[in-house]
Length: 295
Image (cartoon, rainbow, N blue to C red; front, side, top):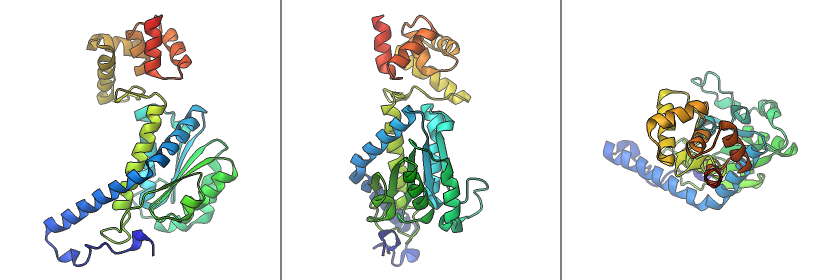
């Protein structure tokens, strides 16, 4: 029996316990699940670098999963554009049953092999495909992984059970060995938490590796609302030491690009010059700032 299907040692009589006892057990289950991620840091490093290389080459990041794992993948993928400025055209999210009308349960679709084969047609050589399933054997992501490998894509498999298809058949296997769920088989709990943490770590390190994070700030964010516009101004202020009015003016000249606004404020003579320096430094802002100050 897979670990995610086993009974939790504290589950017996759970429904008879006090509210404080139940919530404490649930909380402890989340903490134990989170701790499991540390065992896979080396593989998360490899995954993040594979993702970064894919983005640099202009290829796609593809998330493929079913059920709650599909929700984890979708949550990660949808944040890459606003957080790190990765073009939406380079991100694809494949979830069994699709992402339309998600209020309707579509559990039966995880076994639909023909749907997986059809959805996998978007995958091309050079893409990086991240397949998730707590069980590690779910048909939908397993079939997509197989198709991805056939076309020459890099595959990352994330599962919560060892010796399963997503791990044995992937280029980069990431095992998150979470303990039994407090509610047996309800992998939206511990397994889902561990998956979300792993995806957070991997995609954030990818953003750092790409030079889209400096001093813990999102220097390549897409500011499409008032909150993010103010954040952009604050980032320019924090990194350059300028005041808000200068930051606003620089962002206006840079058409909202935080990196270009920082370079202009740091001494770049024009937007074109800032773009050229940034390009020559592989989009790494810290290196580009050093170049500007030398010129």
